[in-house]
Figure (cartoon, one colour):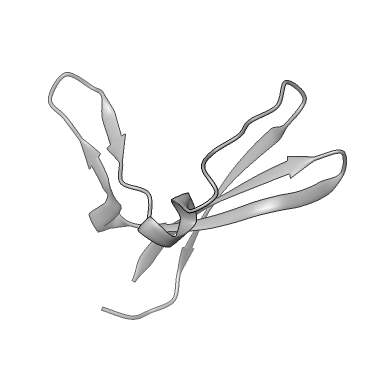
Length: 64
């Protein structure tokens, strides 16, 4: 299964890591992208501070 991983870093420390599958990411004809966050990841809300860094990576674990 193909996954997208977003990590949020603050002051040199990772504060959140969220994995998305291709089913959670939809690209529309007008170029906009909609990402559906997993419900358990939203329990604490999303807070992004001014100096936070977001990193995106991809992985393929070979599953379906």
